[in-house]
Image (cartoon, rainbow, N blue to C red; front, top):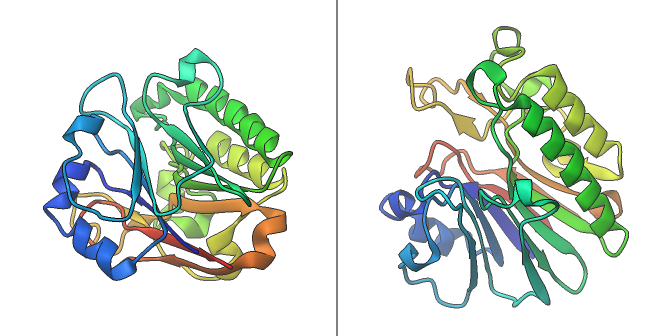
Length: 249
């Protein structure tokens, strides 16, 4: 089974930049999207063979997630936890016979870290949610998680310390999650590899490969023996992020 996660930074824009061609070439069983920036009725495109689930933010043109899947899930849940987490269309949970799939677009702490307190509550509540799911069946958790966990996960760690996505607090929350029975699949399979999944549109960052690895597939540790591949498709354009891929037997 091949799963893709991609922050498309506006699906309508990405559709004009090769999205459907990428899907045809990659041929995934499941596609998880973040930052779709549309309402479900605006998602007009031909993609045969996939069931579609869109979760949009109340604020139009903002945030939003989607799951496109060949196999119809047993159930699909939009949002999680308390009402404070349900206004921005950030989490979709699809239940399959062998696992739960959680597609997530984690809130950015924003300039001046003005949303860091909310981010900390989000991290604690989502970790509790994932652990609750994990008690029933294993979890595949993916998306733009808006954190570079280790110094090797971004080009300039020293100058970015305490910037959004590389604060000590955010990194500690990722460590806490991984210490709760979960594994970062790319880092597990490629412990020394330096590869990024996001580049700023400014300063020719992608041309210079000045990037961050902030897009992940994280799985329950007991699923690791079934993980056969984890990749970052740096050659794929269409967004300021590139797709990340997980293959499981």
